[in-house]
Length: 457
Image (tube, rainbow, N blue to C red; front, side, top):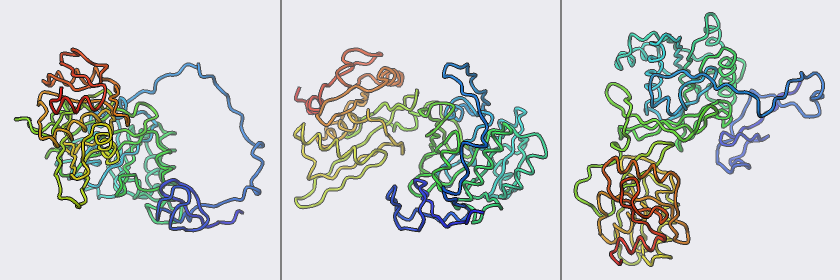
């Protein structure tokens, strides 16, 4: 029998080390090595010949016929949009999000909607008692939904219970960090326990055809707690994002083996639970009365859905010798530094003696590089105290050379802007003229934009 050896697994990258270290040598993260006491390491020399005793399998060509997997609608179109059309039988989905963001509420609403249509649903809670889940369901108006409910943390007990009858169409485990297997040493939430528990539940889903949804805790930096291999084991990873101080929530797919990862579902947290938002731009656009310096609207794109958000900038001049601050909310601070550098080097503007504050209204987070031109316009407007017309939108990518480059899906951005009543667009030079009902003012370089905003041309 192979001798059990002590090993340590990095929770950030999954690398295995023979001894504990403060810093992982592979990913350089600190304090991420955790002892994996349930593993048995077998030396390579003691392994059997891998070419004997195996089973031959058939290799197929890329041109083989493929049937698209059938999907089950959750009854919540915004949820289905993020999933790529609905839940796939036998799939495993991992949903992560901050505590109190609404993960359990959303899944309970989806479970009730599916169960009401006649599909068997099992909801296993490892964090709350069954009565607590019932109280939440009644508060949401779902007390009569035929959802089978239990409070359990033992994977062996859960699988034994489910095997006594027909498999459910949907199995919700809330949460995977509370589950434990008696075959593995360690407390619930440890690397070995999370990996083993998830593996058993996923195996059950694949064999029975049940759609499995695992709820996952997240760390303070927003990543899902536990071993990184957990995200590789599942078919779909969903991130439920939002600020608890704001009412909006965004469900975003970061991995999806059965669909794209560019769609989002937008929800609003109300007293009666999570409600879908058909027009997300209404959430992120503030009341626009008089034009204010430093504010510009940017048509962001999430998958096939344009979302108009307001970017706000503020600059404050400091006395000589003071160190200026750079504060960013909702955008990448490194990209802000790049835009400021281009404005100084290519356009002759000086921000070295000014504090710069940048905010995306409504708590929305932007990763789209097309926001470069809108951010630059907001900064120039704030510094010069010259408002940008409230009926204008801006988008375009800015290169280090100062060139304004075209971005993807420009027509879709312009069409959505026109539908919401905007009349003008500040955009790359390739879009000059009248487009989608908007008057497009095009710029080849960032200097052209600065000259336009400062009235030099």
